[in-house]
Length: 127
Image (tube, rainbow, N blue to C red; front, side):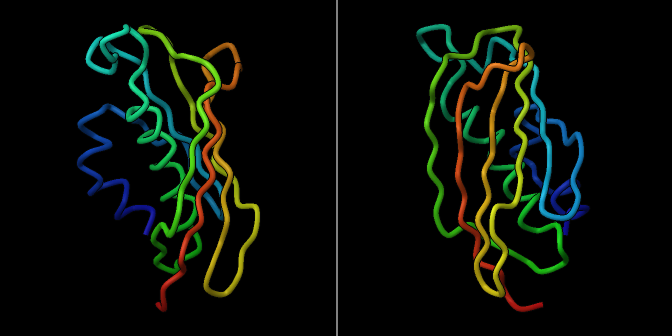
């Protein structure tokens, strides 16, 4: 599933999101912020930050060979990102059940400061 996501996530490619790593229950994605990622207030658009985290979530919850889809997600923005920043989303599995799994994704800038916290609940489908 990870290779399928890597090859076919056209929206992530459009944004320029890089997959740094993906393994059992975890993933890291990265994005260098460009002018087109900014909103009208010259801050990183919330949708861009969400998309960076969402890709890490998708990779982590699909990392065990069982197709999974998002049931619910929440994001809390705590600091604005700026043009030129490199943002990283680090996803880790918090709980893993037969049908449902929970993930926490921390989005940080290159200084290590947290910009946002994303929580995702995934439904694990049958193989």
